[in-house]
Length: 344
Image (cartoon, rainbow, N blue to C red; front, side, top):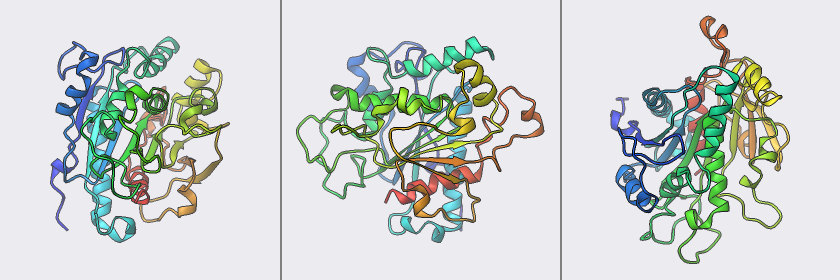
């Protein structure tokens, strides 16, 4: 089978400054709040050919170019897996899989110290902070909530994007924290991501899946910081329809050794999520030739044990972060592609 053309996996890029404000690409001047929707419409024209939109947010100590390369490689690996064995992903029959990526890039570099770690942790929170952070606007544009001319979705509820595309969030490290903040604020701030007129609540625009590799957050973060991601006490919850999937590996020193010192507890990327407001399920990261059972992924929150693969190289085992960035593998793309398939 011939290789897919590169434009299918060439991601768009959105840049934020250290306060979470959108900036003009290549510049430092922030975009005024009143022009955010206009700016996003120009920067993120969602292609009609795309079946799936993957929003990728990078983690600590990642340059803008490295973030784009990582997202492009994950998408390319997923597309190659699908083209090589389409029968392994039967849910994609008919519509196929034509991914388009959006990379949200933010200044994540600091000194490799506890002070630097805490600085970037707080900055990841600021990306969505009320009054400054524009991250929810980015998500809102992709969902269609900022499009005043959108139509009420007339298709099945699973066609969650305003144009019928499926929307998937992918984060790494502090990028996962960033995404949770943005999605949660979507529920808390209706003026940002609210309906302009009443619609059938059974058919909202939603996020179809969220996958976070080696999340840099305390194990109880979903109780302490992200409790409104999930519905409860009569509240609708954030627009997260599909599962929240979190990988972890004990070889991840950044969310083990460093996180233990910075937050007095190991992180999710090292030990998986602990206390949570919804039931959890634990499974293992699978090789590309094995298929995930529906019962392993069809949960609100899924912990994926990647100990056997995310181990790092001889060089990275001596690095302060260990295997924290060892997720860029075909097996990771297989998990990402499976989540896209099961969203149908």
